Image (cartoon, rainbow, N blue to C red; front, side, top):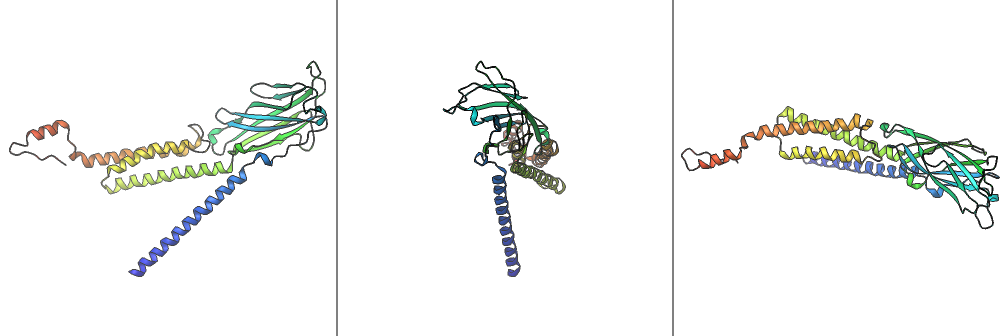
Length: 318
């Protein structure tokens, strides 16, 4: 008997050690995934503007897949020939961006210390495919010199450029294609794509798996209650009720949670919520049936108390 107990303790100890090691490996792997999926701003090296032209860098700032808009900062660096001795533009430059949701043409007059603008772009994608949704947009840029009266001179300036991802944009993986790779062009065409980062996908899948596990456990408990006809403690009823509201919080705390109605709701959340409500109803019904003999109304209690002094008086339940 003692040997069998010692073997059981030893086995459980090794299982506990294995679980702790598994959690530690998962923790380190998740941290490594997060660090490798971010692109700090310090790692970005701006391109050199082409001779007599401009370098245009697009920096995404915020992305809302629900409204299908992305806000970007566009930093423009010109060839040193455009700058005077004090570091400001020696002549005006006009930059046209399309398609943007706000202003399309930006004018930088002579004497401007730097060239940077904020623009909003419309994106196309299906947020209902969370966390595997992909959103795409494009940006076209052209530029011209301005004379002293602010009139655009004929001839477009040569351009190059690309996309720079800041550290604050770590929830998204940004892909880009440019027609100015290794050369310059008078019309810069950039294609941008936004997909969830590996860290976001992993976190979302883990939380979805936990919701599914919760649904399975609740279904097993409900099946056990129905098939064995065991007495249900009222604490189990309150547990199911608390889980019903807690599940909503878990769903809304998904990283970059999509609006209600996405595939994660249709395939997981709604069904787990349904199982929880069904289990709550079943357990409440079983508890009421088991305790109905202990429940009397206030009128019945008063009537019982009035008969306590008479022969054949009854005893109150409980």
